[in-house]
Length: 116
Image (cartoon, rainbow, N blue to C red; front, side, top):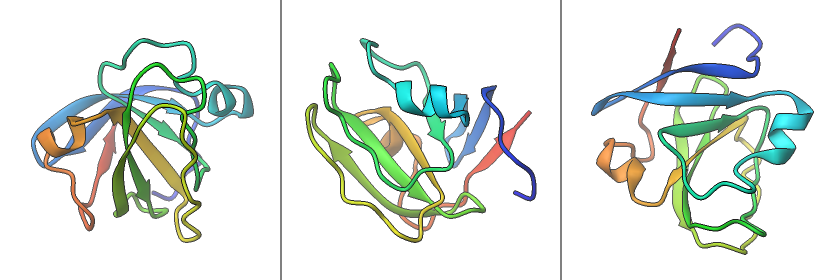
């Protein structure tokens, strides 16, 4: 990636096409994450991050752990009110509504890209 991520919006390039992307890079936006939301249109990239939780969340999510260059290391679905194990090699976490990542063709090893 070569540059520092900043809070904002972009598009995520996936095998199935572009997806709306929200980027949470500041301490405040990373801490808030998806709390208080009833769903998500697209995906949320949390950076830097290597572990997430769904405590007090209202819906299950897909979680992809990403390398610094946005390659998917691991992927799983996390039910509400759960803690995920940290992935030490992960530098970013991508979150989406449960089932979305399969529809987008995202699997371990997939190379993702952020489009401005």
